[in-house]
Length: 484
Ligand code: ADP
Ligand code: MG
Image 1 (cartoon, rainbow, N blue to C red):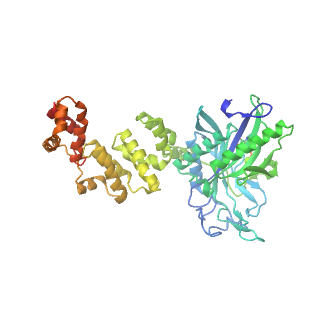
Image 2: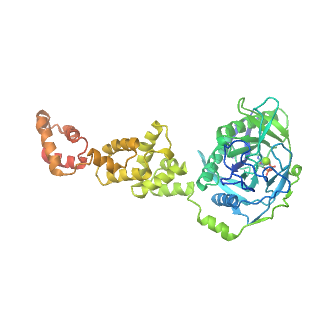
């Protein structure tokens, strides 16, 4: 029990218990059981096959790509991949469900017993994932086009989903938010779901109950449906927990129900009271064989799994980066991929600094993301190589980066065009030093009389006279010789 997570009621402290069911749209070209396109945003009812519209006699054909994505996701959360799983019919009536049932997995899911780690201010927590099952999405009802009619868009009907069900291991709204963020990151790294909550490709149902701090049995839960942002997940859980605490403290009892979160008013409202698995009359779909996958299929996917955020973070830490930098660089796969290209040929810290401070700064100012950066990873890498081989100074490099950002040209081309190469030739620098000393006779004699602080003044003058191109180390060395 974590003190930070307890909520204070009138009669004592309470603990929130949360389990999340996340529906993640599987990234595939076609739907789970038909060849129609699964992409988002098309004109209504333009991506509907006879199977998706449940025409009589149409048979489902499993899309193996969707299963690959499910297996990859399971592997990424250290789960058991079940070599045998079964598709069931979950029966219910709704206008946007033409089959009258949803094909899902019930008793035998594709994936069981995984885990997702979250980092909280009070330490790392490991959250259990009970299962991932594969199922089809329903269509969409449209109620806001006409005051008297409702419309149905079946584009989404039959699109493949992974339902990722956590154990009731989460203990605060913040932990739930962190869990969803990490899950989203894992899905994006693996490439099994784009994770875009605002487009509906990732939706979350939150099961919430409360119990008195330090007591064992769980309270009765309410399930809040269809939360589509992390902020709403946090708001809805906190509202719901508080509601339950107040109800229990005033002598009431929590009734199991399914609720909706009203984002405008910030409250949850009952949608329907308790429904149980047996209400859905689950049974194995007679149109589909049990799904049996071979060990070699799983092993093959395992060997092709990309490096995951946690592994990357560890690798960056052991390369000498700070916790903070490792966190920033792994926050998005695109950033990590970019960094890896730059760090491949350069010092890790130099690469990290120039990416997070210099390039990100310019991207932010221009309201751009790493994906539309005018400076490619190869070109940033090229710039850093010029710095580490002393061809340009760090100061000049910042100006070069500005030009790279505007023109997209590689660093060496810009340096050659503008004649920015660092001067390391001692006779050229010596000549500049002599000029500077002659031009500042009074400072020169003050220095000679003991005002050694003026050394920095001379360095500055020489750098200025060379337009920043003189190699500072050589300037220092030569100046010392001349002055002492
Ligand atoms: P269903 O919603 O189909 O009845 P489950 O009973 O397996 O499915 O639970 C669904 C989710 O509810 C899981 O994420 C689980 O962790 C969570 N859950 C179960 N019991 C509780 C509880 N008492 N409080 C909070 N969450 C719970
Ligand atoms: Mg449920």
